[in-house]
Image (cartoon, rainbow, N blue to C red):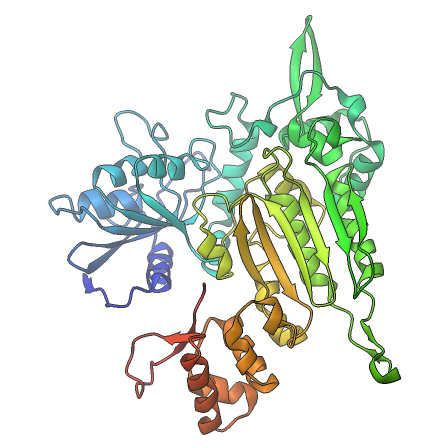
Length: 505
């Protein structure tokens, strides 16, 4: 049944509707053991009405997008519509002729904007649906991480089979996400570090030994090496990702493959430190270094010694892993940086977020799972260094409640994406560069940082969290609004649905 869209566009509402439709999917009977995905789609039409569809809703096997566009709205003019789909639409060529892929149907319907739940790892789709939509002028967004987790959980068996099909596919890929996926003819397996490989085997708990056929086959499937035939002889050659991850000296090929760190406390000179070598070894080396340099801050004003708490390692680990995994390694000369001083810690890496993730998504800490370098992501995930579900956003969002520290903030100044951590609540006033924060006392600053970490709150939620009466909560929230730190959701101020919303830059 069609529903009228509200004036205040809230994408989460339609993400939830699409997930609800996904849960109503009807699986078609199959004899080949192939699991079909559960998919839901929601269409916001030009007149503001909303309609949904599920896979198999009207006929076994019909895709949710096909049902929505071709069966329920075939005679409708859909120019300028917005579509939400829980799974990446199938790409051109993914379906048997003469059937069109759902991405083609979306383009033909002149839909202007598409929100996609998760990418489809099936080798016939695998980001090609997203690429086709973008190439045809459609704005693409991804669902927020908590919805992605639900979609992945429901489609666990489908995703497992799709990933296996991708690994078993022998043909050369039609779409190459990075030149680093290609083999390097001038290099051989002697360039690999046995120490790095052994560390990977141990951390991943692989049942393989160094130089075993099973290990090289595993590396071939993971995109670390490629099998080539020369002079009637087959051999393995490292790929670009293989050299970055396991090479003795990746900088020999990629000069930008280094993490340059420096520490400067007070009037002391900066202390530099470079981390280079196999990428799989660098996170542990950086963590050990951080434990040494993030010593307690000491103040000797008025002959008194004051020691502050050590900055937590966990969020820094997430930030550094993200920088190593998601940075653009093809930008010549653009290195990764870690800069530490008394007030802040900055992690910088090359490249904007990978499309269709926007900089606004990252700044709002709602960036979903989509890696620029899936080969590195896979290896780091096998080693237990990261989760593939999202970009450590939960860790960052939880810093205020867990550590009573400000939410860090992202910024982009070409070619670097930076993440800045304030080392204390008080330091946030100067580190953020927002003069309005100077007008807040410590209690108000704590309150504002909590709202910032939540994104939006009601007066009652604010009062309950800090154990304030509602008058005090109102004074704080009103002050934040007056200083242009917060806005609202447009509801009447006396409405139970009225909420204060953090204003992202």
